Amino acid sequence: MEPEQTLFRWGNDCPLDRIPYGDRIGPQNQLSAFGLRISYDTYRTELTSDASAVHGGDGGESVCGGYGHMLAWLPLATAHRKPIHGRVRVWPGR
Image (cartoon, rainbow, N blue to C red; front, top):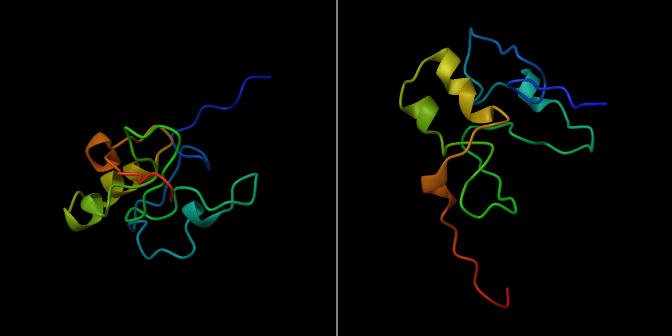
């Protein structure tokens, strides 16, 4: 069985009457199949095994940059990667 391919982890739709930041009832707040909160806030980024990119947010750029309601949701898209924010220094021994 092939996994479903959608724009967001919850499907292809998003509420275009508001931005995701501060939206407590939007689809981004649904837990994943593993009970995790993934890509729920455009300000929060998620570190993964891919150290060259950040997933799940853009540091709030889309919201504070005034991109509009549709584009503000795109950092929460499954395929979103922001390489410039992905430069994270991991100190040995920590």
